[in-house]
Image 1 (cartoon, rainbow, N blue to C red):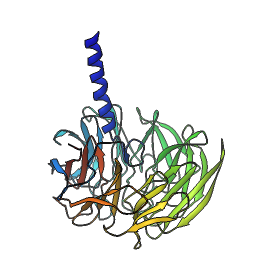
Image 2: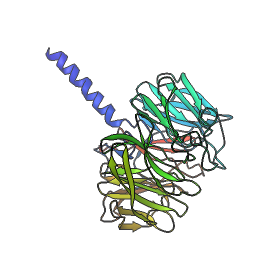
Image 3: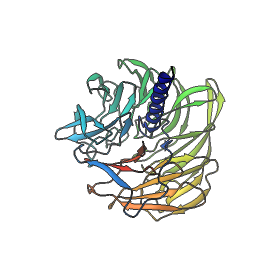
Image 4: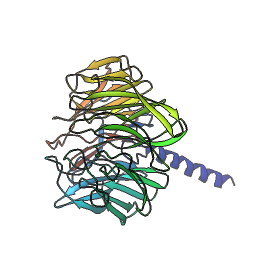
Length: 412
């Protein structure tokens, strides 16, 4: 009996570690880009943390990675085709590779840009031309396939190709083909059959990904398009509320939600807005709380931590910390160029999009920029370093086109 208890305890311990390390989709388990990892380095040595391993053959593109169990998943262009790939967490070696669709596209920035979504033994991913596939996690074998343009009449707001990372919610896979037949569609995740389509909203698809929230007791999806921010009932696809919000050129960052309030931001001079969602049941309202240009976030993402928002603001704003509820700026700093932001263990991990791909570690605080480390990424591709950083299992994952770097950031 005692031996069995010890074995069970060991299994539970391993399971809990694996769960803590899992990053099963774009921006993590809750799509908030907040890692629950602890015990990480609070500062970096000169030259950065220790490199555990690197691989240089994962194909071109701007997709980030998902990490589940002992595997890493991503997407890349190889020759004339884009492929979904599974890599070993231990050393980055390829485990399987499955064709997603044709390569290229992207209006001068070729390659896939969506991140795979892993749910149990299934994986889902969208290609730059709207190919949506469901694969087996174990071996990459195809379960079903759709195309957002051909099967759903999908339409993008502009010409850089589909970038949304699909969302699994219960038995459904939810995504945004856009277009006159309905902006958002839910598919049975096991078969690909249509569960519902929101035909009350007919905007084009943006480059943003959906989030799932519960507002006043109703489970719903928040979608940000080129013309609206809206809430859609998860059970039926009914449009619950919407607010006009005109985007420009490319609307990319995901909505941020807390306490019946929805924050959105986009680049090209548009700025940010906060909406308060009122009402209940099937009678919701959306009222604007503020709109400003203190957070003009292009595509590096915005993180809400406690009651403050953090991200890079275009138009000379630089890295910005802003009060979520009021829009008041707490601090701004220009010690690093434009880029993306991720969070773990009391720190923000910042990545510059331009050469030399500098990465900076700062304390996550509304009291000011407190830098505790920086280094320049080796093996730079020369292209924009747009894939967002991923933290999991005591590791920092850095994707740059065909290169994937894995850094050891756990305290010794």
